[in-house]
Length: 214
Image 1 (cartoon, rainbow, N blue to C red):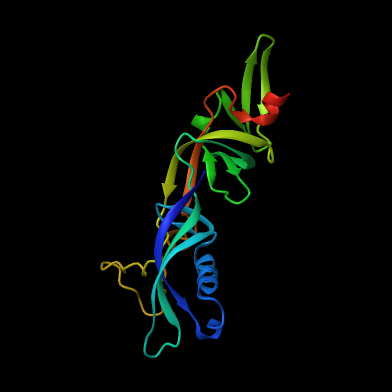
Image 2 (tube, rainbow, N blue to C red):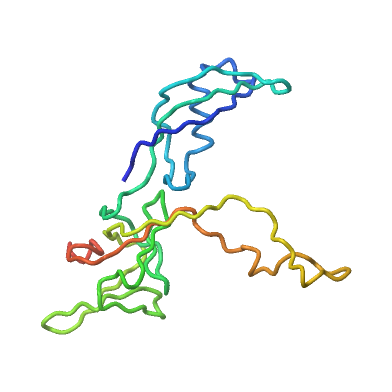
C-alpha cells in the first residue's frame, strides 16, 4: 500500500531561514511542496522519509536564496494491483460505490464489480446486494460509513497540469461586445481526480465487514 520512491529535486531555501540546519530547512520545503500531492504515475505523496544526498548549493544573481539539488526518498501511497484494502463507504451513486480510506477518497467500485445480483436503490441512494439463501433473497444494503473490503483492479492517473486557453474557432469570429469565453460546460468546471483507484468485489469474504461479522 505504501512504497518508498526515490526522487530528485532542486530546493530553494529563502535567506531568512539560513540560520537553520540545511537538512531541516530542505525537509520542511520538500514536505510543503509534495505532501498530500499526487505525482503523475507515482501516487499520493505522504511525507518525506529521508534525504540521501545533498549536492552543492548555489546562489544566483538577483536571487538571495540558495538552490540545492537534493536526492531523497518519499513515502507514497500506491497500492499494487490485486492488493486487498479496507475502507469506508463515502457515498453511493449510479456510477458505483465511492470509498474513502480517510486520507484518500478517490476510490470507485463500479456496478459490474459489485457482488451480484446488485441493484441501485434510487430512494435510499445506496447499492443493494440481493443475497440468495434457501429462504429466499435478502437485501444487504451498502450504507454510508460501513467498512468495506475490496481488491484493487485498476488505477487511473490524469494529468491535471494547467493548460493554455483554448484556441478560438476560425469559422466563428467573435462579434463586437461578444464574450469569447467558452460555455460553462466546456470550460472544464468539472475537476477530474489526478489519481483514482478502481476496486472490485468479486469473491466470498470481500465486501462489507458487517455482513461477515454478523
